[in-house]
Image (cartoon, one colour):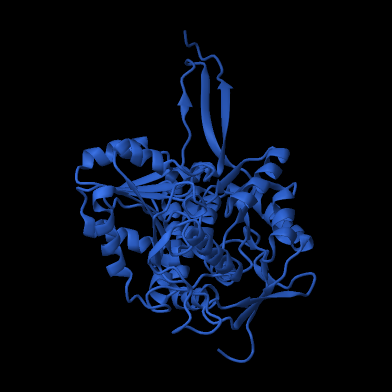
Length: 481
């Protein structure tokens, strides 16, 4: 990278716009701590400009036909694919991602726009029969200006899964990405404009939660909020939404279990468990990081997982922790787990050798001798750490699965698919995969309990971004008895 550090501005009303303050935030690489970008440090004044632009653009965008919106969203999908190399470069530099998984994740971002560009053409209300003298029907209308706030672990992917259905439904959007990983979101503004999205329909304001996020969700012209992030911040946003009496979608993370029974395909289950900590170094809200195993096969399964993880190379097979605070939090949780009696059967420490001095790398870890009341068993680590706990009966497995405040996702591995389905119905989680069941763009995603409110992905998300209106018309008497 050149000695001149690239600088990124807000994207407001179809153009890059410098921050009112003139300040920019340094963005450093978690791979080696080097400064890679400078990003606009937003304020309430920048939020005001963005929301005003979105509000001004919404009536015209909301009046477009679903066919017109479909064409634009499909063009945005094509634009993401055409710019994929540039987007991969940005996410690898800023978020420490590996090129191959970054490319996959970004291509899924394109899929969101293509998917919602397609299904929006099926958007329809119902007619209600109230006799021949009445025409009564429902229609799905946009809210207006929607605020979308995204985390640092999958910036463009998670931004797209909120932006695409919101735009498809006829809303305009103000996006606030994480201050740690903002650049691909800002690139999306340019790509969308080149694809034909009218000025002001998508706006991106970067900066801190306190100076951008709070003014955004508090703004009187914002009529719906979509947030992905921590429970603490989600609760704060939920209080603001409740005070303003506006709808909010919250995707707040998880501590998801993977239940493995003795009759399961242990090799397949081991691969699935290992991937939970290797993909994005476990920095995935739905990662199944609580390894609940039938006691008779626990040692064998842990051995097979260890064989997969052994020799995996930092920077080649998995990436770093994205932020220094999260890195320090992880190491603290591992130290506490050891003090409480947990044993690291695999990994358990930060890397001292083979990575850059300031690289935020932690060994893929499997902890055994974990008790359900330990911090590491109850709280989201958000890193490459599996916690293994044995069970003896099916009921005990379900009880362990519920021994957390979260309910985002779960996985079941067993030899009997019917048993797996029955367990999926018992587990309190928004999505349950049985024996590797596939979850994709088309499948609704969201949580039970404190994992959140509402659903993203699938056709369900399109309706999350609409409000329902009923229209009833008394027809003139045409001599109908």
